[in-house]
Length: 307
Image (cartoon, rainbow, N blue to C red; front, side, top):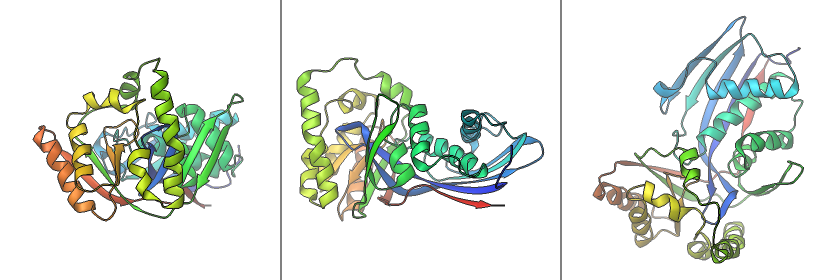
């Protein structure tokens, strides 16, 4: 095994998925970035972490970023390095609906790929990461940036299209509620009524058109959903009330962010007042929450290798 580089730095953005009706298919990159630096060492695995939930991050080879790093070596049939030093700066909250697990997965895959001289291109990495995650909704925007639509074909390759949309303000409100993605997915029924499927797929094109064209008046109706949010709201106390307060305060649209528990809002120019209204709604239900005033991003993940 020959490494082209022995030190690399990777940056991966947060992302939100679904945006209402686009379940497991639509995602948007968010201008909030995790950063990680990798260095090959003689022996052992050393992990340092700063930022969001740094005290919860495993500091050995069970770290998900390191495990993802190893996965690419295994995928290519390469020998895993005997020693790696990893330094993480985490800005994306864990288990928030902002794609933290996808960011970790891509960080490891991108670093290993760069060290090995980039044998896989971005579309190969999209296929690999989506096969690991099970869907491309967070992977595609985090990797490429912008608004993305994606589907896994029968041959397991991902069909993906990227839209570079006007950068717009967004608001993510994260309640202090424990809801892992696996738990959130388990809430969903195996079968859904035909009318609910029609409801969602009839709105999805309008969601894409609203963001592509800038016709944001479409967003309120275009972000409505019947496939996943109704089943998840009961596990997130205050979520329905917070979304309703957001709309009353002038939000263009408000949805769950991915599988939750975070809530994603297109606030227009009223981020502060909408954030305050949503935080109050959660407080009224006895739930603490944090508001992140952010923006969409047309930039995806990047790698800076050093020999």
